[in-house]
Picture 1 (tube, rainbow, N blue to C red):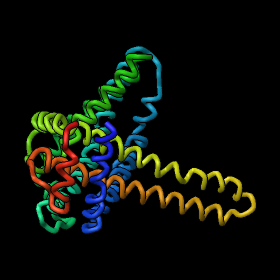
Picture 2 (cartoon, rainbow, N blue to C red):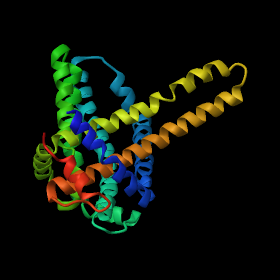
Picture 3 (cartoon, helix red, strand yellow):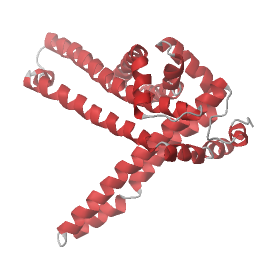
Length: 285
């Protein structure tokens, strides 16, 4: 496993070079975050004004409890679907641009959007499937205790890994959700170590990017009473660091996923990647 970790992270350098060639790829996570905020605000305000959120907090009568549960499930599914649709749409656009670069092209933001719009039905059905699984897992986790709850969490993690290549498959092949899941699992079998390392590793990097600035917040607590301006400046700098670091990490993660897909599924070395380095990354030991 240590060898797989080393080989997977050896691909970070080429991914970084791709990002330096196409810095505009960083805009996709930004637009995705803005769209998610719009979805959250646009959904919360009407529900609040209509009194639906207040109705969900009421708990009187068995019949009303059943109605609340049905309403909660419907709202949760709608919320999950909207969020997943936004995330998948922009992720597909980013990965599509990376795939264009890997094939020797020079992608633009418009190219990414064209690919996502072209596969809009597939993105919508995949978002619906992902949302349904998410709601069911959340429902199980809320009702179970102890070991059963832990197993539900592991099931969710397994689903996340199994669908690792689903978005590249949607972009390239334009297949339905069932076929995308099947092909993703097949690709995972070929690259299980590298895919798992990159999937988990980027999450660890994101967490580390946040942890490294924790001392800054501790320092802010000491400076706030005597130097509030300096404290506010440090807080702003720490927040900017966290946002930028996670922006870069999420973009590199999408580029890595596209590169692994191209080599594992199509058997081709992506442009900007050294062929020997790519072959070494898939040596099975």
